[in-house]
Image 1 (cartoon, rainbow, N blue to C red):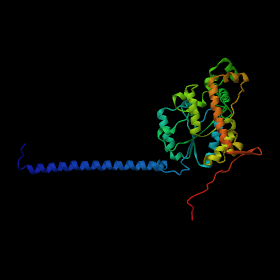
Image 2 (image 1 turned 180 degrees about the horizontal axis):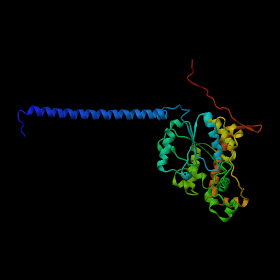
Image 3 (image 1 turned 180 degrees about the vertical axis):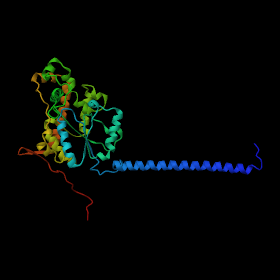
Image 4 (image 1 turned 135 degrees about the vertical axis):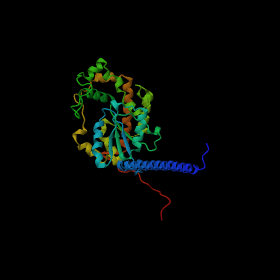
Length: 347
């Protein structure tokens, strides 16, 4: 297309005007984008300010502590946990209940990742005491440098099963009005064993071993020797302290001596505290010697009992090196090591 010489200046003017308009629109668009970006940054900063300290804030070593109590059902876990709740305000730490759907002790892989991330990065909840009916989870698998402190309590396996059997039918004195899953079933534990019932079968004894074994599939194969060996290994290498229900006061005393940041005052509270610390299953009838003997014929009982005896021996070994008895009372030993031959000597 050829322009008239007379119209050429007019066209050039129009082209320049259009170009300037396009440039102005582009600049305005750019300014709008920058303003939106600045607004989003301000919103994020405000959320951080409202939510508390930033997640990557450095904590003092004493504050950067997490305890996990992966409590086994019917081992006096509620009694012990209530002490942690009573002490948390005074000793300045947080208590959090891990409530899983249908009390499933095994987490999905994605929940394991979320759980590990929450516990290790949720600085606002540190120091933290987490408790719940979950099996042992190895934090090292997820690349965590500072692992939580695991503690637990276990119980004679038959006594634990008997307590759980009646708990499902009659509840306890902690929440007496709550309707339980087997409420209305009046059959005694002895009658259940005699009839070969499912609720009192030897397979129901298989619980403390898998709780300590962990999230591997073999842990939950009833009667697995590998699972019991793994549970023993975890108890020795991964748990700070494992007590027994029958000697709960000594367990609490050792925790107070070793971890006063959390448990200062726990022993006195256990001895003189509220009645809520003593949770008892109602309508429980002790099994007969015949019932006990029948359960003890099972290889499952033998393995669970072997694990219980192993834990008991380890606990008593630790106690023997930490506690002394005088005039019928127990007391914690004072520091029994010191430093000498320190070189180079200071002037």
